[in-house]
Length: 85
Image (cartoon, rainbow, N blue to C red; front, side):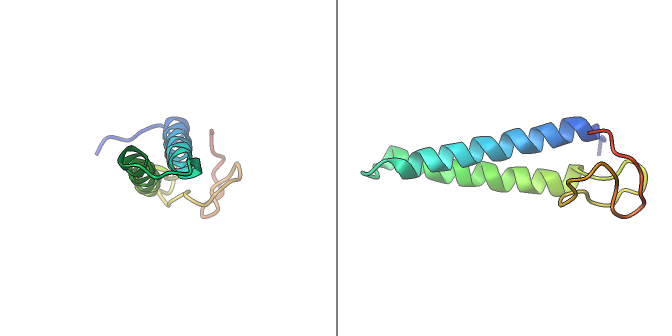
């Protein structure tokens, strides 16, 4: 599998999660749930799940390869490597 730079993977994860959240929220805020709104809600949920799976696969430390999914700092919590985000 081809490696994706950490900065690119982080951006894709954030954009995917935000887009999915916006789509699901937009579908929920309308009072009458039509078939189109239901599709929008489910599409948003699928996009959010896909971005979480993407993060689990590609958000990894470039040095030790451990997952950085829950790391919000500038260093890897496992090996201490400085991260270029």
